[in-house]
Length: 421
View 1 (cartoon, rainbow, N blue to C red):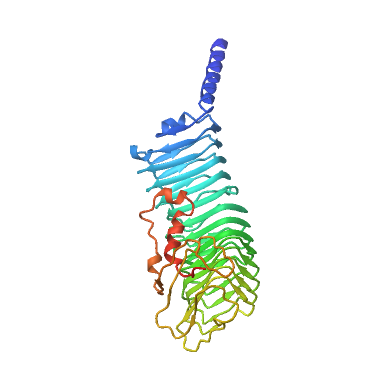
View 2: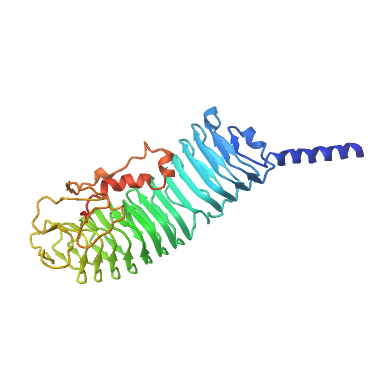
């Protein structure tokens, strides 16, 4: 009896050693629950974990038991029938955590996950809820594209390189109240009524807010790159502490907008564009003194109040339908350095004669004006913003994983208003 017990102990120990040996190195390619079960005794996987084509075999549910840490990537992709995927013990992933092209998935459970190298959730059209119960507090990049999520729950970051939420047609709220610093933020092509709250955000490189109904970025102090608002239903944009925009600034296709409040903004390094808004007066910039690119103001406003503006390095295009408009600048003064000067009211059809991509970095040299893209086109402007809409049905996960590829396409149809320098 003693010998039998000893033998069983040795057998159990040998089994544990064998199981542990399965954890020593990857990658691990999983296509069925049985293969996953072989890793149940592993708490740490050293290598990438790939779960692919699992749904094509008819499997609808997969559970990744036991694993607490993956020293590599976790990639779940291309399952036609998989509806539920659970990682009940997973706490951290050193690399990417990617789930994409799972058209029937409606449950993704990661209750203990707090840290990933990057998060990419794309082409999950039936996913309605995120289950980051412990709170995802560490990720260098977050990309959420083409889901049925109504809110971004369980993600609480204080800094991030990329934060992209695009093509989520049901989403109503995007809240990151603890986020203080980001390099790139892109919110675009989501539900028309989405509300965005980055109330602690103080530093950003480039931010695009497209199709939003509310935005809270009142603590923003620095934008080293571009700051764009487009296709919004905002009635007010207020950024009281922002002092400088390193590259370009644009407010486009926001017909309900009636006021802007940038009381401390002194410098815009690139183009400055306001087009197709509900503004009756271009004001809210009492101390802006320098614009490094072209200045384009298009709409139905009757006045412009930028009392400190003394240096526009690019060209000027001001066109308004208002009949009682008086231009505050003349072609003879020293404010506008570019060669082209248009400033007129009573305009029946708003148009501009040259444009450049605002996402490009612009530079100016003494008295000459050149576009960063090197090309100029004739463009007519319309209040119809339907051309800028984006469909999520044809999106591939690769577009989301490229960070701002999708957003660049959206902006390409929107940011056609700034004059070449």
